[in-house]
Amino acid sequence: MLKPENSRDDLPPMTEAAVKIDDEPPTPLRLFLVFARIGLTSFGGGLSGWFLREFCYRRRWLTEDEFLNGLSLSQALPGVNVTNVAIWIGHRLCGFKGALASVAGIVVPPAFVIILLSTIFAWLSRYPVTHLALVGAAAASIGLTLTMAITAARRVTRKIRPIAFMIATFCAVAVLHLPLIWVVLIAGGLSVALEYFDPGSF
Image (cartoon, rainbow, N blue to C red; front, side):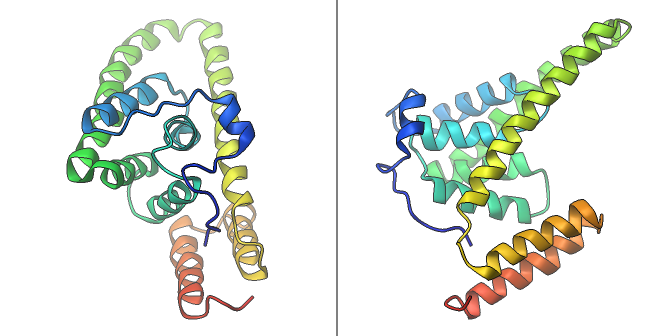
């Protein structure tokens, strides 16, 4: 479980100073435009880091705790994580219309761009510089993903059990290469059950 600490008015000072804050309230149209912009300007993954920056730091529509809990739920559910997170954020902020606007924003505009770029890439793939550019984009996306991972790990409750589950999950997936679905079902289910029935213990 993630440790609840921050409120919308209690963001980290460094983050608040580094990001220009937008105080406009969320609407379905604004959600569509925000997700469309993120989808059109993100390359190679790392979108959860963009979401955290946009919705928690810049717009203050969600706290870190709300976002990280939604991210945890979205990653435990079937489907594409990014789409799940977009639906969760949209529904959380503007209900059913917000969920529709969010998933449309993150899927539809990038889909048209992917069709256009795939046509162009098929022509440019003969040049080595094209592959070098993609390597650079992948490195940037890894940095964004690492930012999100460090932020989430920093908020895990400082108790033996959550940290043990975190380490065991990492070892099972990254070291032992066990099937992800079984790791999520067993480790995630066991962690949730223990936290629900015995939240006060180690």
